[in-house]
Image (cartoon, rainbow, N blue to C red; front, side, top):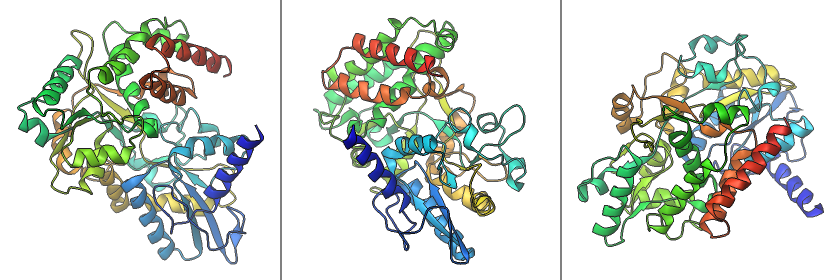
Length: 431
């Protein structure tokens, strides 16, 4: 236990000293004054602590805007941190101690998890420009605006167009079509192209699979389990179908053999090189891969329907956000920082980095080659992420870890469901 506490303390210390000069994906960064307390005034200026969950190119864009903000506001120093996979754990500890960053990202949990810690931003000039599609996710019935949504998550898995064209495969719309396509790609490429690449060492790509397809199995069909998941009466024997679907991908040879040691960056590399046909990620995988192969041809596809007679769907909700800690000692500077990101040119930069629609009206959608895909699928049903609505707070890590254990052969689909049921009931009772 003592060791865990020491590790946690080190994580917090590392996060607090990050600056805009560090690695955008959460690498170690140094502060010009490491002895200065976070959020305090330094000299005649303000020291603003800012933390985000995003990684890769989107984090780099956020950091570059922060650098420009400091040039335009030399009295405000921004300590920018992007700790990557440790973000949620760090934020949980900060909430427990009630010592949050002045500005932080909410990664889909603006209302449910972070709502009590966030200042109301409804009086900000940009608040009147919230796009109608994202507004319900970042406001409440009383009109409180929890965060600035610079973009809005709307997506599904992605495909490498060149790979599909090479093997004469149509973009699959159902799970059965996806399985047929995977078999053809594996066979026709003699194993040189992996049908689906997952960076399982990072764990969250595994959670992404369950978040996507839980909707197809339990929520989107006409006869669904939504009400039962919400009221606690769900029969967890029914959940077996989802981990079995996931395990079957490995058993049939449709996943990369190094799925448990590969990282997200490896998925992007394989996708860029035409060695992977599908990515169960989102449009951001395409943008990441294009840094390695600017000529990459790729597209967005909906989340495949599973039940007979059901239609494919998209997932939507928060993506890149900034909220202000309600007890921030630097509230004015924090609001000024957030408003800077709400400038149309900055919203456009952030949205384009994720190849997603903007969260504010008055900013043109520039999703590059995916703009046509968003237009094509504009009439599909858009569901929120499964875990954000139908599971209690804390279940995301449970899905990720059990997914890893499943692929490693440590548990069966039935045991996966039993573990989910146990944690679901425990976390519901702890509310």
